[in-house]
Structures are given as structure tokens and as C-alpha cells.
Image 1 (cartoon, rainbow, N blue to C red):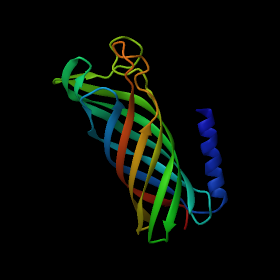
Image 2: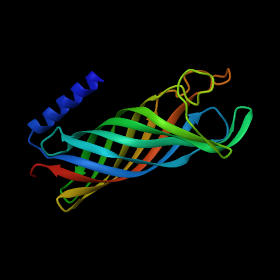
Image 3: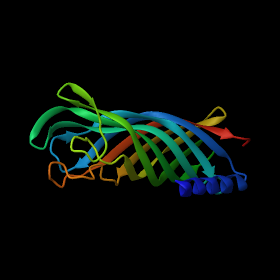
Image 4: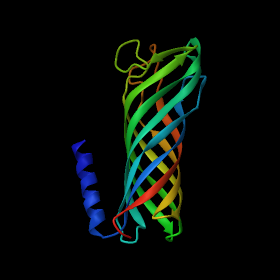
Length: 214
């Protein structure tokens, strides 16, 4: 965590040193998530995401920027069966997520396209699972009755979007894919080698607020 803070502090300092425009970006939108698992009967579900981003210029023309974000994001899946037990319902987990993205902008002041990508780390705050109509809290840990073992979700994010001038700032429409790398089931389930990694599509609408003068 100290290393992440130091890296972010360096990037912020470097960004302001080139005297280019930085932006604060409140954003929110929909999440379409699923689990990559060998279990059968698992399908996607819809959730939500909201948070803040900080666009930090690396080049004076804002062609290349670094964009750390702090997000509150819901991930999960819908289940029809699990192992030898049948159930119908869904599970969701709310995460605090920190992506740090490299972003490249194409275009001018009034309209632009961009692509981005980079690593992310998320921490599971809480969640709930609906099993045949009965709603219970998601449990984390190493005990036999837990739902997931791993609260930490490392991943990679890739995406892009469009931005266009609106008032003092810019409206941003962003589409992103999150590739979870962490196995949420560190301990085997019922003696099996089942794994589960998050897979997420996020569609968000944001507004880039200029910090300082353009």
C-alpha cells in the first residue's frame, strides 16, 4: 500500500510539473459481471459502479495521461446450480477498487477518442447471496461454510471511450473490461479444484472537471 501511495504521489507531482490540464472525474454507471469458473449453471448479472477519477497529464498536450480512480463497484453472478446441489439465485459483492490506468487521447478540444488500460486492486467490503429465495450475507475466510475465501481481487482493465466539450469540462462515455486475476476460492470447494475469477464490463458516464485554468 505504501508503494502505491508513493507512486501516485510521484505521478501527481510529475503531472502538475508539466503545466498541463488536470481533471477530476466523478462518474457512475452500469456493470455487467460474471465469474470465470468451471462450475456449471453460472451466468452474468447487472450491478452498478460509482466513483472518482483523477486525470494527471504526463505530456503537456494531454495526449498521454495517468488516471488513478477510486470506485465503489458491484460484481457477481447468477447461479442455477452449484456442484451437486441445485439452487436458483444470484450473488453480488461490493468492492472498493483502485485502478491505475495509462490513457492516450486522440482528437481536439471539442471532441476526442481515447483508449486506456492498466492494473487494478479491489477489496471486498460485503456481499449477499440469494439461495432459492433465502438472502444471506456472503462470508469470507477459511471456514467450511464460507462463500468466498479471498477478499482481494487483483486484475487488469482495458477500454476506451469518447469525450466532448460541455461547459467548462468534458462529458466522458467510457466502456471498460475488467479481467480478474485472483482466484476468489483459495480453498477447494467440496474437495474439488474449482476456481472463480471476476469478469466485468462497465459502462460509465462521467464529467471531467478542469482543475485550475485551461
